[in-house]
Image (cartoon, rainbow, N blue to C red):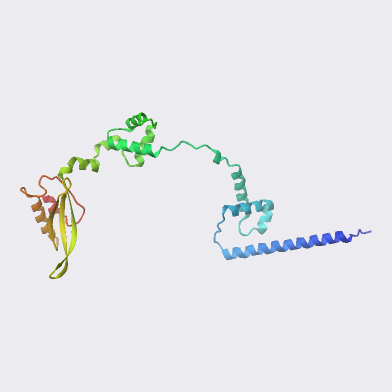
Length: 259
């Protein structure tokens, strides 16, 4: 004899079946919608925020790999589960609680090391180390070597053999003259004309001498100026040893050889 369901139980079964059917229809629609979106996206890689990865990973873990293979269309099941493993690992990551390692050398101390090396060209790493220690700063000589290397300062032997530009100027200030050209536009009978002016400056006194003015500078003009400047009686370069100039082609070989 078959058991008969009472009307209430029949109603519950009917409603439950209808709800399951509706849920499945919603799931089928969302899966198909994802497939359509994937077709629209093509091979372009999607960019997810950390929050989006976290939300997807939390849902993916509950479904498992088999179900994910059927419904996941935007992200592969392997990627979803990898995100979940990363969430777990991050939860137990204790790196944020680690104490910092060896502190970096303070910028002020680095500047002091550089100053000592530049002002005392014969001082090696250990001599600088001792001077720093006298000021209350303890540094390894390898640390001092690394500081100087980062700033392009050579070890003491090479540093002592080379002369810096500042040292050269300090030693030979009285014997240096600088030269350069500038141009000026002048109205003449033939119209606006550009003239080239060659001038010289004594670096010690800041005295300026006009070497020559010409509308067309050439090698003969430059050679005559060189003769005038090196005149033994009243030449501007008398007693000078060094001439600072750029690589302008007007500084011809004959001009420089006379000087």
